[in-house]
Amino acid sequence: AGIMKEKLLLAAAALLGFATACDSTKRQTDMYGTPYSNYKIKGKVTDKAGQPIKDIEVDSYDVRPVTTGSDGSYELSGQNFGGDLEITFTDIDGPANGGDFAAKTVTVEFTEADRTAKGKGWDRGSFAKSGVDITLEEKE
Image 1 (tube, rainbow, N blue to C red):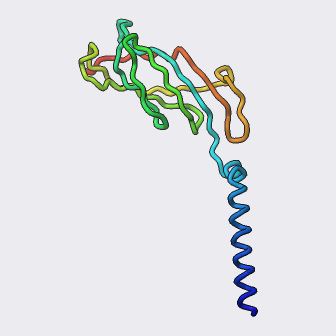
Image 2: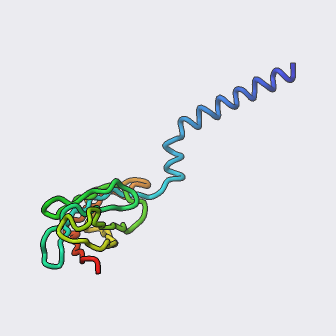
Image 3: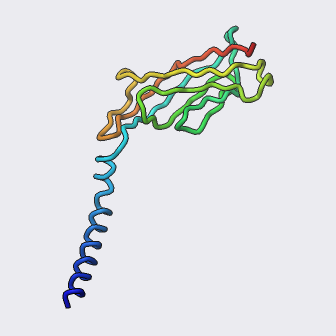
């Protein structure tokens, strides 16, 4: 009878543990989360003469890349898990867009002035930055 009682207690403890594990998913993420923020960056990519460059891939490690439009403009949005955000601009079509441009990586810093929404817990809020304009130079 002692073994049966022990098994029953183990089963009850397992169920109890399972129930609290399911219930505490939100608390778990709050306890073991990673600070993040949502961002939206807008800008324009031009050559040295100030002409817009289309089909430049705008990429950051944590989002799907976007491509500049015919007016050279782009809008990149996603979630950032660090402070500053590195963005890389890459000419993916070679000379088809008017030149063979060298890739360029820039760091975008978000400040309190860029905040568009307050965050809570690990969510540091939302930030938007426009006018992140880049000039690419042709490859040597």
